[in-house]
Amino acid sequence: MSAILFVCLGNICRSPAAEGSFRAFLEARGAAESIALDSAGTGAWHVGNPPDPRMIQAARRRGIDLSELRARKVQASDWKSFDWIIAMDRDNHGVLGDRRPPGPVRARLALLGDFVDAEDPPEVPDPYYGDGEGFERVLDLLDSAWQPLLERIQADRAS
Ligand code: 4NP
Image (cartoon, rainbow, N blue to C red; front, side, top):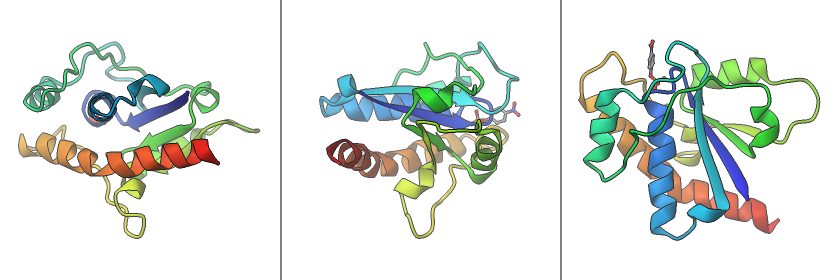
C-alpha cells in the first residue's frame, strides 16, 4: 500500500480537490485499492469544515464528489504515515519543509507541479479569493499531474 497526502493552506480548495480528483483517476483505472489518499492544510482556520462550496460544485460538474471530506491540519505523524507529502504551491512546500520532524521519516516532500513539469514546476494557484474560473484551473492542472504521479508510485514500488 502506498500513501499520498496532498497539502494546501486551508484544506478546503486545492488539496481536497487533489484527493478527490486523484481518487477518481485511480478508480477509473482499478488502482484505487492499493493507494491510500488524504489531504490536509498547513493552516487550521477551516479544521472540521467541508470543502469550499465553489470547489465542491466545480468538482461535481466533473463527476467528483468532495462533499464528505473534512479539513484537518498537517501533523508531525504524517511524515511517518505517508510515502509522499505533495504541496500545491511553494509557500506550503516551504512551510512543510520547515515543520519536517527531526530524524528519519518515511515521507518525501514534493511540489504537485514536479509531476507536471520537472524542469519548470507550475504551482496550483490558490482559488479562494479569485473568480470562479480559478476552481476550473485547479482541476485542469491537477488532471495533468495524475498519470506522471501514478507512474512514479508504480516505479517506486518496483524498485
Ligand atoms: P486552499 O485555499 O489552501 O486551496 O484550501 C484557501 C482556503 C482558505 C484560505 C486560504 C486559501 N483562507 O485564507 O481562509
